[in-house]
Image 1 (cartoon, rainbow, N blue to C red):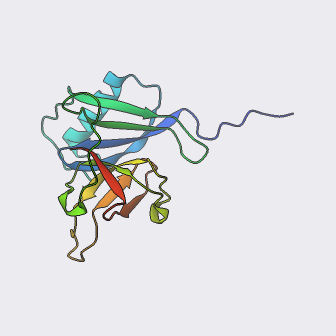
Image 2: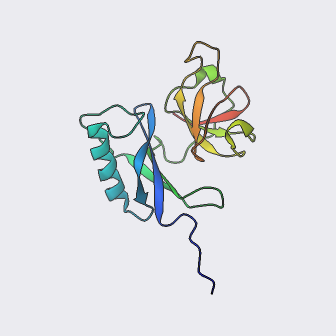
Length: 162
């Protein structure tokens, strides 16, 4: 008798970017949660400092934030991302930037496969540490949508939005 195998189930990882900070909500959340419910959960988590990587925020306002949904793939569980809206609608792809110009919270896209973090070309990520953050001339640290992190260097990424 063959049972249907559910690889990841209905729950998703939740990543939050706010005020140049980025972190993962520690608990799984239903992928099908309404946007308003996701924003309310994130609001409470931000007030209490519950999200590692993001300090407590007294009165977070997520009115102009969006909830992105990334369904499960063969390699990744379903993912949710709460982030600020871009100022003019869709992100505008800009030219390659020097990594020294990237700041915490910037959204970037990989221009090539990055084997150090198992990142495929075209994968989006968020800068969480700027260039030379550890005084070692290391490139900015980026958390990619596959939930892996690595340093990036010139010509590895393209700026998407600030």
